Image (cartoon, rainbow, N blue to C red):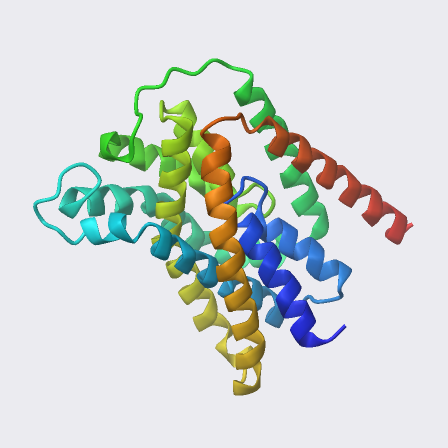
Length: 267
């Protein structure tokens, strides 16, 4: 399989799964193992192409981001909106900076991803069986305290396989956010948090890359961007009408199949 084919496949996987509660990192790691694409360069590539998916959020929610630049804007806008966004990002930024080396050294493996998928899937199914009280129906109703609490939930996703979007959406729902509002807030919070995480990772990995890697990274970036546009529109429409139980079941199935595959290969 050519290098550009690998970039294309993993880019599509990243874009389709980044904003679904199924763990994009987990899926990329598993796909990388199947295609024998792993190691330092692979890890950096998987982090970098997330910028492509993030760009799709900026494009689709450009009005929301432009509203943050208006000082007089109310709700999730202006200085108030920036404060809410920063508070939601703070816990994961701090935890990520402290645990980055440990996470990349010990948790980027098929086994840890499989466990994360299964545990996250079970939690998702259990939460969806509980009747939760909805107190926040739109992004403009999110308080600074609620945003910070959602940010704490987001730190759980440092474990590959748990899912950043899944942890923030479930956390938001437990805190009283409407399902759609929780999903959209998860998208918006992803922008600063992933730009920071990607920038930090690239600074740490520059010595492993060269100018020859630019076309390879560009293919992954572009395919992640395009496929994420499709995934975001689909997911917003989905959560507006249905529960996320099916995603929980999918996670468990993929996690179990991965563990079986690891056992077969290892045995």
